[in-house]
Length: 226
Image (cartoon, rainbow, N blue to C red; front, side):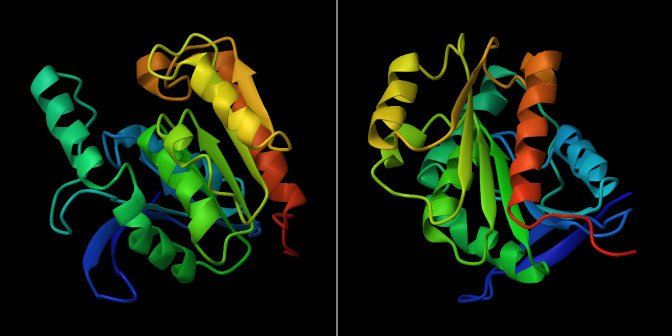
């Protein structure tokens, strides 16, 4: 359904690639889809396509890879994981990728929302706090949100975590909750990556995505007139 497109950061003109899925129904708004550490994988592209079928225009930017790199396939071998983690760390777990996120926001007609997973979950939190032009944000199991918990989202934001996530201690979730008691933080009977194939938990994935779409609809993402 979607296709690879080329975008560029506004300030520097630095190019990057993204996956673009146009809306297949009356348009509800735009979504910037922020990938996990693995990049714009088949799962991210399929999820983008499924949201396009519901009326959203989706752009999933490649946050870490070079503009001419192929979209990666999720590969959990230790050497690949180590390389991807090093790339993520080099970006400050999303900080230096925000110009790409901002370029995607600017490429979409409003209202524009953001959602992200794992590495992209932290990036989504940072985008909620630092980017302009968003209407709402949904962040899934962002492991480094706790490091940026003193920042405050500018737009309605919800967070999703798994109760048995071995990568994100519940103490970190409670630290975020203590800093932002007004913030909706949802805990699921699941581990890490419960929306993704690697840790998929169907009930948690379904409920968290439902809550995400409800947030987007409340924040201006109602179906446009046909």
